[in-house]
Image (cartoon, rainbow, N blue to C red):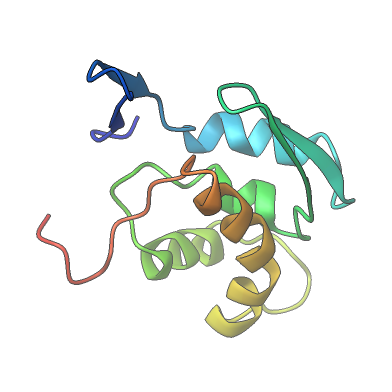
Length: 119
């Protein structure tokens, strides 16, 4: 579970907490759509967006824990690869994951660590 969360100040000065979407939960949502575009409804904001989960999106989201960078997630994905062909490289994985990631990031629902960040 991520060790960070979003906190915003309301116009009246009070604060509210916005939980982050854990990788396992996002993986379930993305996995149920079997690689097909679907409507993602964000409860707290009321925003609904069409998102492409990608071919590998659900499996990569399951590896998101708020601590790992893209590189670490991709390395773990390849380590668990059971496909008949060679596992995809970083460029292919990022291209496949980009739209789903950008959607979740725009909603501030996904936390990834920058590789230069202190652990």
